Structures are given as C-alpha cells and as structure tokens.
Length: 189
Image 1 (cartoon, rainbow, N blue to C red):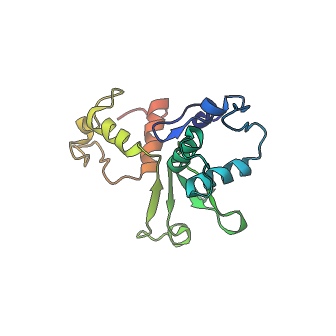
Image 2: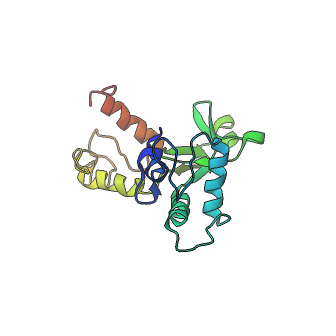
Image 3: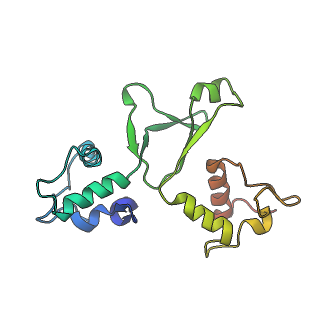
C-alpha cells in the first residue's frame, strides 16, 4: 500500500489504514473501503474537503478526522511527462490529483517554456506541506543527516569559490542532484 495510506503525512494527513485497517475492512464507526473504485474514494475526499460531506452528529470524531485529513491533502493538476518536463494534462483527461509526497515543478505555460524555449517562461513548484521547513532545517543545520549546506555553498547559498550556488536553483533539479549524490551516481567535486 502507498506510504500515505499506511502512515499518512503528519500532522495534516492521517494514514487511512489506522482507522479503516490495513486490509481496508474498516470498523463499525467507519466504512470498509476495500474494493471500492479509486474514483469513488477520490470523490469522497473531495466532498469532505469542500464540505459537501459532513456528519449529522457534529461531535462524531471519525467524520471530523476525515474532513481534517481531506483538507490537508493537497491537490495538483494531473501531470504527464513531455519533452523532458512535467506538464499539466489537457483535454478530457485533465483534472486534479493528490500531491502525496511528490514534488512537482511544471511550467505555467508549457508551450511558451518547451516549444518557444522562452527564457522568461515561469514555473510553479507544488510541494507537500512541511517540505520548505524541512528543507530550511537541512540547509541551516544539516537536519541531523548531514552538514549544513552553507558550509560549502556559503551562508547565503550563493557559492564559495568553485562550489556552485544553490540559491535560485530549480527545486526539481536540486532534488535530482541530491538523489544522485545519495545513490552514489554523482561523485567528485
């Protein structure tokens, strides 16, 4: 099962398996969700988020937890990969989908960015709640995982000597480079 279903994304998104059980059978105070169509679950979460679905008993905890969870789940445009970039899906397949734990960066105007190669085209980054705070902790102190980024890249992350700047870099590019370093695919200085 997806990690967000098993563990959630604290504090804003509870793991579905906590209340509905990992097997999806549920309990008397909630629904069994095993075997339900994914589109139905997405619609119910949308209804909880918009307020279209509530409980007649406002003190009942499970429906209120569902509302909180749905409001914490971030939706982004459905995406596809085209020309080496992530772009919003257009036409009949367009719509929204949960962000989950993904970081998605896409052009505001795909044609302007990809076809025209306009260097003034702008991009938008969708990131899960808390990502910026975790990134800031990593930059400032190493977050208990490494050394602070500023030690090599400078206190303002604008570079020191031959070490490149991090300030102003694309989030997607930065994530790919960190992943390659972590996996040992990017070695050297």
